[in-house]
Image (cartoon, rainbow, N blue to C red; front, side):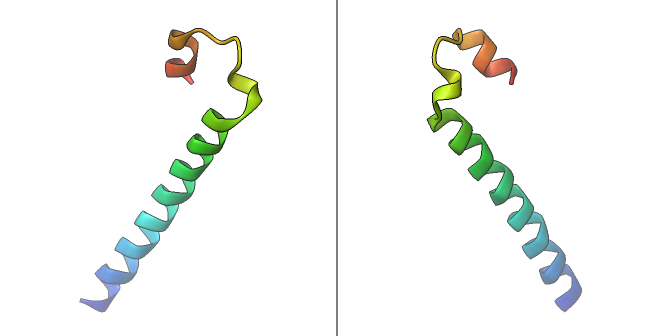
Length: 42
């Protein structure tokens, strides 16, 4: 059972890291001027 908990922690850690990258990108100046559809496609 311990192994599955460790795998779940690693999965959520990776998911959280990707989420934080998306939030950072959305908060940056690099999206200024992009159309809504362009932002969604990224």
